[in-house]
Image (cartoon, rainbow over all chains, first blue to last red; front, side):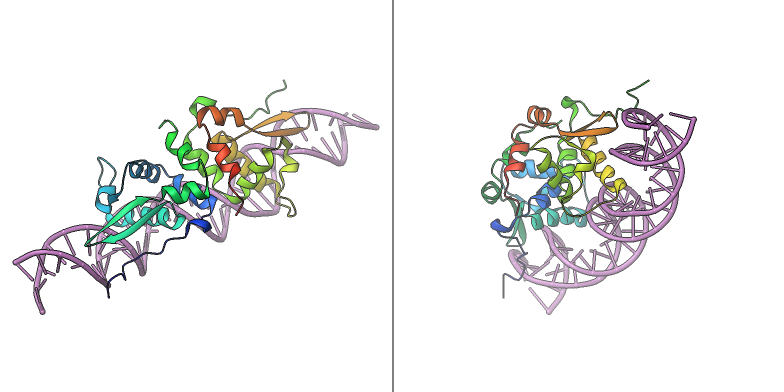
Length: 106
Length: 106
DNA sequence: GGCATGGTTCGATAATAGTTGAACTATCGG
DNA sequence: CCGATAGTTCAACTATTATCGAACCATGCC
C-alpha cells in the first residue's frame, strides 16, 4: 500500500504565528526557505551550499519547518520534494513571507 | 552622574532578521509587542494581563526584545519606559512588523 | 529476491533558552 | 541620610533545541 510515507502537515487555517516565526528564526533554515522561494527542491538539494550536513540534521530542520507549516515535504518515487507553502502562508499571514524574503540578507 | 542606567541598544542599520524573528517567536513576548504597538509602557505595566510574573523573568524577556532591536528601554526618573522601535523596524525590514501585528491572534 | 538509494526516526549528548530568588543599583520623598 | 520604589543583574536550575551516528523503511532496478 503506497502512500504510507506521507508526513503530517498542518492545514493552512491552523498555522500558528509564533511557530512560523520560530521556524524562520534559525539562519540555516531561513537560508533554505530563501532558496525554496525560487522553486521546489529534493531533500538532497536542500543541503547548504558549500558545507555538507549529516542527513539526520537536515531532516530535523525540515521537520521543524514542516510542522510549523512553512514547507511541504511529499514523497515522489524514491525521493521527496520539498516546497514552500507560499499560498498558505500568504493566506494565513498576509505580507509576512514577502517581508521576510524581501529583507536584505545582512 | 546620571545616565549610567542607559542600556545598550543595537542601531537600526545593524538589526539581524533572525534575531528579530526569534524574539517575536515567543508567545508572551509577542503579546507584549502587540500591546506596545498601542503605545509605550513602563516596565511594571508590561506584566501580562491577569498573571503576575517575577520581575526577573519579565526583565529577561525585555532584554531579549531589546537586544534584538524590537523595543527600546529608557530610564525616566525612577522608572523605565518601554517602547516599540516601529520606525527602525520598518526601515530595516519593511512590512514585517505590520504583517506580524496584522495576523489574527489564533 | 537482493541490494543500492534517498530519506526519516531514534537515542544520546551538547548547547542554548527560560524561570526564579536574591543581591544590587539608582532615584525620589521624607 | 533613610527607606521605599523600580528595575537590572547574577547564579543556579530546568527545559527545550540542535547535532549526529546508527538503525530503520520504502522504492526502484537488476
